[in-house]
Amino acid sequence: MAGQTSAAWRCTVCGYIHRGAEPPDWCPVCGAAKADFEPYEEPAAPQAAAPAQRWQCMNCNYLHDASEPPELCPICAAAADRFRALEARETGAAGGTRDHVAIVGAGIAGISAAEAVRATASGARITLISTESELPYYRLNLTRYLAGEIRADDLPIHPAGWYEDQRIEVRSESAVESIDPAEGSLVFTSGGALTYDKLILTVGAHPFVPPFPGTQRKGVVTLRTRADAGTILEALRDDLPCVCIGGGILGIETAGALARRGAKVTMLESHGSLMPRQLNPAASEVLAEHLERTGITLRTGARTREI
Image (cartoon, rainbow, N blue to C red; front, side, top):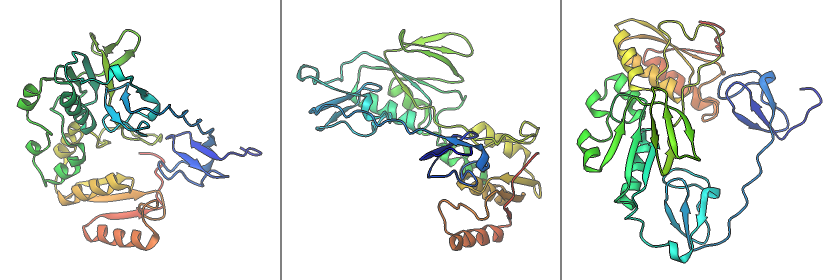
């Protein structure tokens, strides 16, 4: 990277964007080294749309009344450039639409989108697509479930009957392989396809797994799904040695949950202190002392090379 200058830098491992004259010594997200950053060209800002009294989101049909479109759609998070100005003849009620709205992703965002579509388009057909077998649930509560603070029955966002009452079809264990916007169709990895009139993507994130050897070994798991939590709970027993790699919010919550279940937990943090982006050194030290009082062994400055 000698001789290159850039106002922004991209981590080639996890995609984190750092803004500054030089890349950071370490990526604050994944811990990658300075050499793993490359110059990054900031995308041009979208051209401002012409003023209008009503705007329609081209992803989910949300209607926004203002002189300008919102920065983000409150339903599907589409950017301002995904809104179109409606003409006066188009601003009538949308409740009678018979469009088929497909929502890929059944987390909180997907459920919120489905609720909003049903509230504004009573005649729409709604299909909610999930890769998991369970009914949509509160993913943020997985660490509480792991800790034994709540039961499995407390996880679902709505009971099965709610989806029937709202005329929302939940298609479980269905992973989308490809999307054809021109034809308005989805193809599933298990075979089969689904046509749609409107498509909302609420697929969320996935766990970042560092690119060092051993991450695919038996006994190495991430915590993203209810099935992941079930795998961990099946393996837990008193005094079971457990290692949590990463001292971010999820790592801390997971370590606390495992310790509460009686496991012997060691947490590895690659930085010199916990949560350096959120806490100053003094606050980080207070948090570290609290974790150690709960029985968690903390090692900072610990960069894993291999499992």
